[in-house]
Image (cartoon, rainbow, N blue to C red; front, side, top):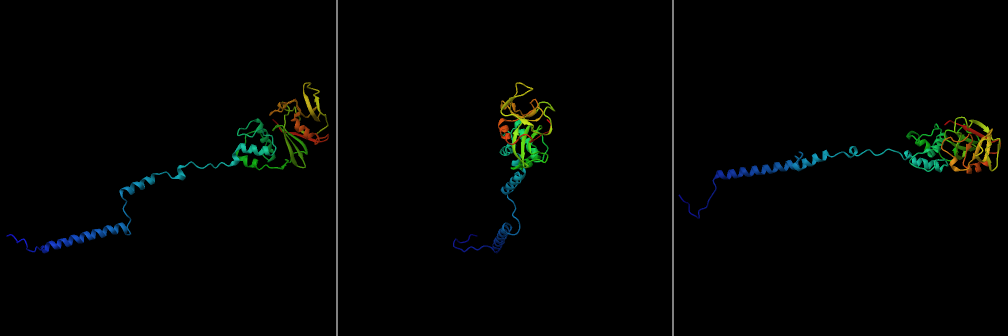
Length: 262
């Protein structure tokens, strides 16, 4: 039977009850989601967050992935060492990162001055800091004499006064073992200006100071005669400027010590 168009329609009691139950369910669901998102429980990672976390964990740790920082000390720099020795007046030639015979000459003597064993090898890391401690004034080693000391090992000479090394010089000794006698001697006599050897007629000697028979120390006709290895007939060759400097400091009676081996 049809109802009239203007009749008031009412919902059945059962339908209203169902709507109420559905509303309570929706409200409960909203409160549950809100509590989960903002409450004490940790938020479940979403897909994007999980991927980001995995990416971060796969990145290398800087402290482990980066190569270790160099622990080398500036003292390990051979060129700086040679510059240091050069400033002290030791004959090291031109300071360079490469160690040639001229550089090793001065380094050999520096070892002796700081108490290390003298040799003409390249500097070792274990001795670098000790070599850098050498400074002016240079105290003469205990075995030194007051006067001229000549090292066959280093092919160098050094002058001592009052326990202090005042000057270091390049030197060349006898080409063969024994040609330059070792020991402590005294200057016996000396010549002024240029003379010729009484044994080797072509050898010009500048201001020779004899200390063992015909053997003495003297200047040379050419700087090229000052070698980095033993090359003389027995005398000790020194640069002429060093002979001039020694002339007033090494009169007859002055001590000359020759030591070491090649």
